[in-house]
Image (cartoon, rainbow, N blue to C red; front, side):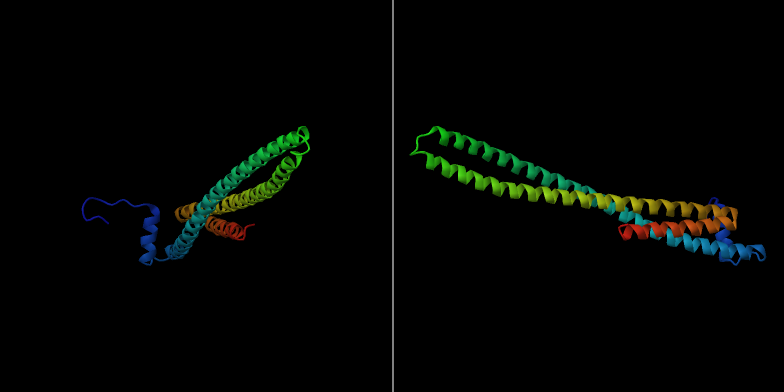
Length: 198
């Protein structure tokens, strides 16, 4: 409280002060227990919600990173396929040259054709490997996005729980306290699903 001027506090501050001082007896003692219970539960849920919020942000960042890795691998695969196409073109030209050349030059062109065929096969293997890696990165990104949505759902439910706690403190309605506990349990359950990648 301020030493100079005046201090204005909300109804929940007033109730917390009464709970600390043991209340004024009677009905306040019952409400003091309710206030302490809600305050403790709110502190725990706010902490859990902060952790879930952090996890939601982390999975969202991972999803973006994995999507970026997929794009890089797709670009590398595309480069390999372009390289494959250039070898195919060279092979076709060598085949044409072989077919149009004299018999003494045909073995020279056939060696080139055989070399291009081997190079194409090596390039194809590399391109397909890069495409498989890109697909794997895409899958991991999708999994992280799904997990991010679960963390976000959980955090949202826990925020609703905290709002219910504030309303329960102000109105002293027992059913709101039960709703708060239910929302808190639901939020933690959804967070558990996120942690289990479900």
